[in-house]
Image (cartoon, rainbow, N blue to C red; front, side, top):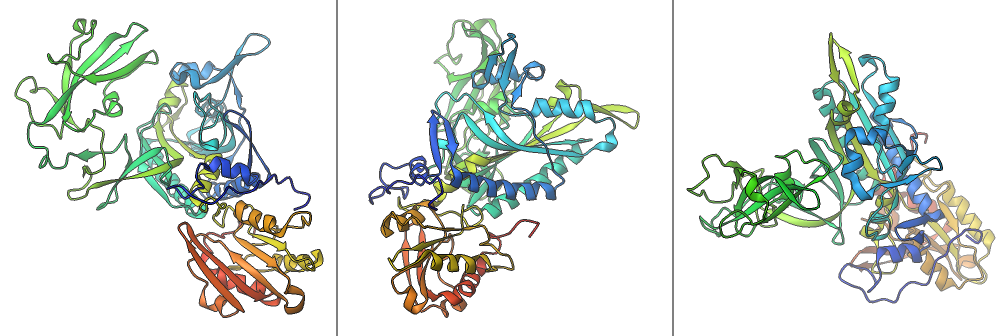
Length: 575
């Protein structure tokens, strides 16, 4: 480690907040202190060598799973022209989040936040026959978004690493099958990452499409709220969730509230379309659900406000536009006047405590989460706009598309968010830890040669049939630092296995093994039998085990101790 760029800092003092972090210390602070990231400017970070190793392991998992479903990796340019973005309408609808500029010739350019337009143009130009479909094309690259308020480190940055796959199928049925195959592949990816996650129905947003799911790491610090049924396990993003009012048994018939939904345009807010919306009292109308009824142009926006006493919601320009049929929420009571042609449906924002909209007896429960992946069935939104079609059986039809994204740099920070140890450091899942083991000689008579002996023993150790420690061990030879500082560093960096060469090593040949492995509540009996001495401490964030073993039995001990974590330690296809 003496030659590594590892700018760690002293850990914050103990004393924690309700999220298990040192008081006043965010995960971004922790990643900075542990030498993983360096802030270059607002929303822009350098990934230091440790973080790059984590990213590489995340990308390896993704690459292996994408190849399993026929993915072909390519690299598209980040510097794009707006021509195709104008054709799809996203040049206007994306708005100020786009990084755009003029080159020396005065031509407008943009930094790609996503690549639907670019990949569609590539396929249109290079694929000649329907027999060349289906196609699965993906890349992992840096993306750019001009965030109005960058925050939370890598979770909401202006530059980020993204894996995005684009699929092309002939026919909707085949495209839906692809969507479900990709959902299964994403589940395998996140199973292997090793952080508790949830899959939720979601809105497609500016990407578009009619079928969409999000992948979230479950954590109280997350920005998103998921609603999950305790009975049927239906899970959806709060803005998308379907629910029923608490059976109208508590609220009673007739308790409802009216709103006015309007599509307006221009700086003067000219009303183009409008409807009365009635939902159960205690619920808000869902702009997301209402928006699906209208085709809203890039220069238009949806506004929802409480109706005035006369029911029209106020506004000086609304009188020139007729009201379309009322939207009457399923949870609202029938109203005798003006509801004959009302459109019944779920028009409210669901909340915890509502009855599940998917089953008869379940109740929705809320949980906070961090979004790390999103998958979309796009249909022909982009192929139609860019005229990507095929001739099959004498008929020309538009190619059906899908888009599947994982925020790689988001996974790094979100995993850290879910794995911090009461402000003392990180607790990386085994599959993405930058190193699996750290060898720390702390006594004055502990030589580097002895540390190298332990290093070689680890490198040849096989766990679950694979040499998991090969190229995954670091030796802390920074003898200019105190033993306490180096041991704190191993904990701060989140290295799962720390092997300490203490004062008794030369005489006894024993080392202390410190295990901070997610999910390891106890040392397996077969491994514990080899221990000379052991102790386990329980903290609010997990278990820590300290075991003394003879160096000659170190490999055997670790092989048995980690045997129950084979899935998390799945090695690359080459091994």
